[in-house]
Image 1 (cartoon, rainbow, N blue to C red):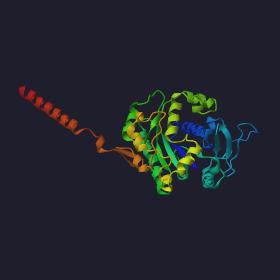
Image 2: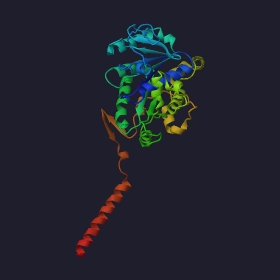
Image 3: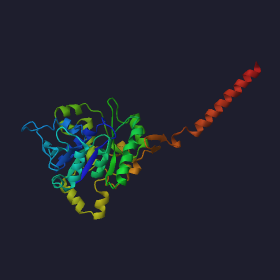
Length: 344
């Protein structure tokens, strides 16, 4: 069973919207999809207007989840997608998520779903690292803004630490989302694309129809499939091979050797994608079959990370020609000043 972790180093960047829409698109491809709301704030539940409280027998009433029997579970919230929360009513303690993740590999869920999409909490406490240990793939959602160059390395360091502790989670890429009023290809996005390898070719614009989809308790790609953000999410799902039907996944894996299945299945070659830029892949073209990528290759170019400090390398310093020109100008001004003084 494949598990895709949708993560970010802070909230409010479009992480939950991304998780919801990727789950909806994956279900369209065939096979059932589970959407795990690992955020104690219940962002996925809020999107679908779900509550952990038992309120009688209604369409949105939760059941006990089938992994530990403690959390909450909703079936067919949107076509082909079930939602699960590891937290019981009134208790969002870390121990519930850890118990769920520990029991998941031995549960009936592994044979029920072909994909689990995990909406992670922001990078606080031990929960993000526990999810990195449990997931097979991860994408990082990043807002295209100047501060991103300072905040992104912290999550990359967390991923490297998880891998050093035995995690096999593979970084598929970094997805940029845009603030309201910012168009694709703006200065912040251009700066990030020039300095950060591993950016996915899609960029998610601010789209007011996201809020309308939430009011309708639906996913944007189902509610408004032609909206700008929905088009980008559809392209992203194809790039990540999420929309491939389960029968195609089985036949594809059957034709591979065990070594190929271990090293290359369902991993996007983000380094190659980044070098092509946004226009390198159209909205209907999937990325080439990739190879596993070491997260260390995703460290932003021109940046050194030392804890939370980020410093710019010498390559970003002023040009030597500019420095030389400045010195010459200073000398000319000094000579002219001397001549004027002697003339007096």
